[in-house]
Length: 360
Image 1 (cartoon, one colour):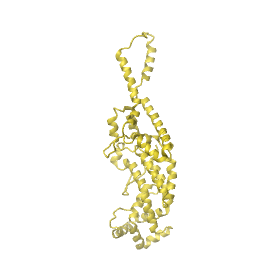
Image 2 (tube, rainbow, N blue to C red):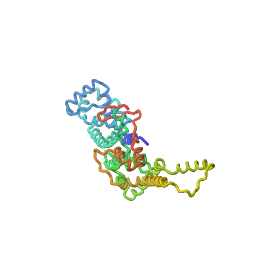
Image 3 (cartoon, rainbow, N blue to C red):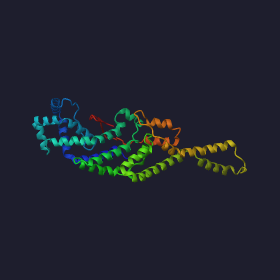
Image 4 (cartoon, rainbow, N blue to C red):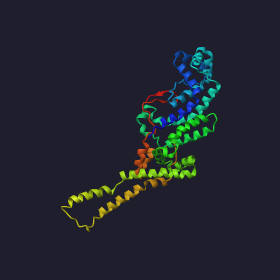
């Protein structure tokens, strides 16, 4: 499975490149202030005068990590008046900016940054949500208890809606178009998606197929929705049938084993083919057949039941633990799907909203 956070990074990076100049100006100013204790002291002094209610610390970003770009811009735009005061009071600082071919950020630059931050906030929230299991030591140790695969499709569809809306905004059109090109490369159609994410969405008992239909209908319209839904459900049944073959009681191995055993013992005995089997054996065989039928119907039974009411107390893993006796095969499939992390942090850094760098 592709790392969703990594793909979001590529998507947003393409958009940020379209507004590179204001971002580069503010990035350079933050870098220059942060690298000198003297400048940090002066900036803090001015902040107390013109931004008395703001207490966040300026943070530097990593140009290739868009969520750190967002943190840097979001905190910096709160200090617009402080930057203006600093630029006026510190002539050497203004001179340094001009030497590298940049200008002091104008009011329109700050306005554009505020607009950009407002637009990027939902993307940042999704990234933070996806990376939450890796954001502190305790959650990294117990990360398997935090399920993300069942909500990933919803987040992806929400992002597509945000991009579509932003394209109609003149100030964000170029940015959103660049982002959607990259977005469509990975998430543009059902056939490009990893179906396991759809399966996890369906196996969330608060969603099932009903929510899938709403998402598909909103994205493709009613006519195409049926086609996409069938494509997903056929694949889900195919996977489910594999689970049945692997985990259900089966007479296949017993039959094969009995056949081999008969060929060995047949040299010493030739039982009468008309001999009746003991009644208890017949009951056992019928019971095994019944179990197979029940397991085959599990998915259909699950889908026909009403969806669960959503609440802050709902625990999807607990729900499947409690209901595993009713869905012994399907619960195994759910367990395997829900443990899939939709992102990893590998050796990269994760940035929190406060600008604190969390090293994986």
